[in-house]
Image (cartoon, rainbow, N blue to C red):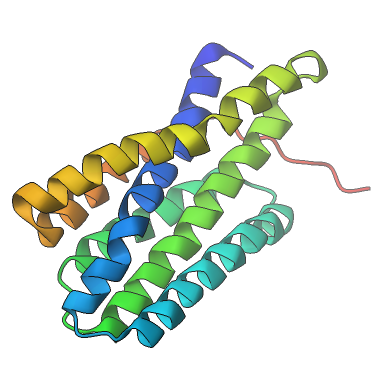
Length: 186
């Protein structure tokens, strides 16, 4: 695997981690601004994590079924962009819950598709290095997202924060530059 391929795969994984981990601590606060009580906020976050789980599992199924990883990766980014932008314009908790679930589903598909593609493109002798680099996306995404989103929400409000994060989600479209590797079925 070339360094360019690894960099592209890393960015395809890093961006959803930045967006997701950046907005996660602010979502309960934003939900209470939409007049949600603590129990509803708990259900809302549970629904979001259920969607993330479904996306992660669904990416494996899609990968096996379609025999391509680039299409789910790119399509999930294209769906996540408007969902994230619309989160900042949600009028009630149910709209926010549906949009957050959509983002989480797509983020699970994107990160898992990038990881599957990394495993398929890595040679036997470099898998440790490749998966080590890919594993850095989660903590680095938490750090960058945590530092940036609070500042954005403080300075310009939630709609601007969600709009900025949605623009960031265009970057994983660079996954189009990656080769795809079909897996032969026995």
